[in-house]
Image (tube, rainbow, N blue to C red):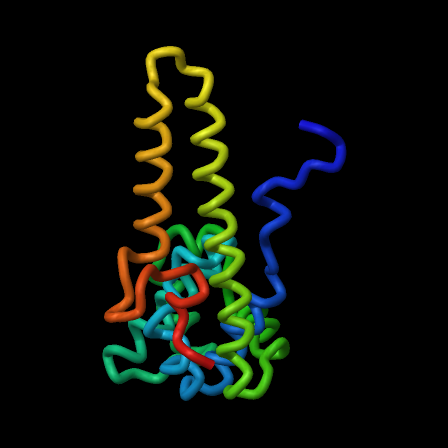
Length: 171
């Protein structure tokens, strides 16, 4: 690696992740704006993904998702209990919240960075297999194209090929 070469760790915005979570915790009305396309695995910080998933699970059950109910949920989760996620961290998330109507913009940032990390991983995998004398170029290209198709979706209804940005809801 050269000194100026960026890595997947450069494709992370923890503050944007925290703002999304804090905004949803402050006002769960922000959740429907992003729930249809933002998934726990899009968060670079696995802990943030778990928090997002827990919020969604509580809301799906018709329960309130706030600092107190999440803390009770986390107390039952051995991994989160071991990490020590509690009311202090959840309160810090709420302190970072923005207006509910702005949650979508920050969630778009989180998703775009997740897509970039996936693309970087695909490129790294391709680079690693390029030097395999057993692999044919056509096979490498086909595998890479298949990965891109999975990432973007095969087609949008009647609109031609999808792109990473067209997999998001319109603004």
